[in-house]
Image (cartoon, rainbow, N blue to C red; front, top):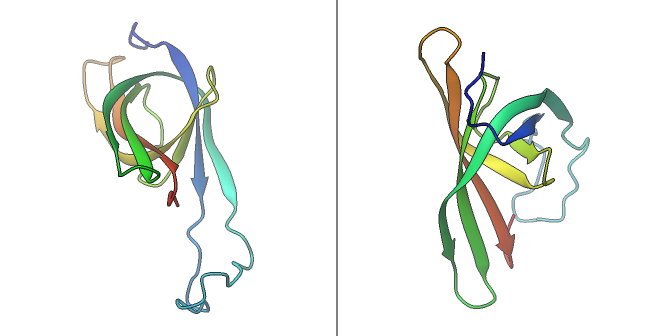
Length: 121
């Protein structure tokens, strides 16, 4: 059973951590070899994504918008990416926690972030 307030479905992606031991920290153009692989962790997870907070840097700088995610229990971790299956928007997971409840009403809450503009990495 899921909560009745879900407005979309999400797909959860996880990228393997890269081994940076052989990279020169002073050479930002050093290629990552091999490139980290992205794995799909879950698909079609019922969810709701709502606006939480927005802030902007100086003119021509960055804009950061934070969102709150509520979804059915799924494997969700810091640094995962979540894509909204309805809008196609992609978010970075900042934190995630399983919220216990009555059987059938457990859910995951997570903080999501989108960064745009100059200097977004």
